[in-house]
Image 1 (cartoon, rainbow, N blue to C red):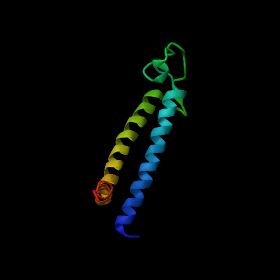
Image 2: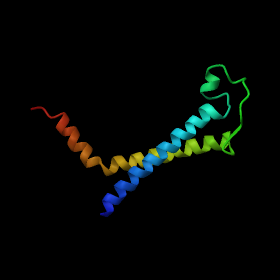
Image 3: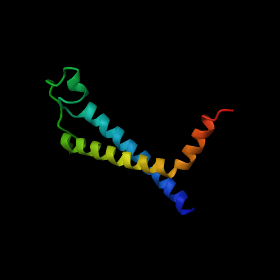
Image 4: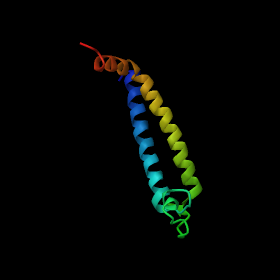
Amino acid sequence: MTTRAALLYYTAVSAFLLFLLEAFSGFVLWLAVSGGDGFRGGRGEAERPGQEEFLTVTRSDWIDIHDWAGVALLVIIGLHIVLHWRWIVQVTKRVFAVE
């Protein structure tokens, strides 16, 4: 495998894994741990007591995991776009070409 192909592969795998982490941590924050600043609080359910940990990780740590996974995902998606920029330009020209 060439260096470019390996870089593309690892970028795609990293983006997928970060997406899974982002989605999982988002669902944990939404459904498993309590808090008045998320979807639950938005529906007037903040006064309902809930658990403060999930899988021995505190709500605060889940927020950090979610935030940093999001930042890392943005960086990886940016790299993905840079690596595919030539293809993006070529396809865009083809789509908007006037014949």
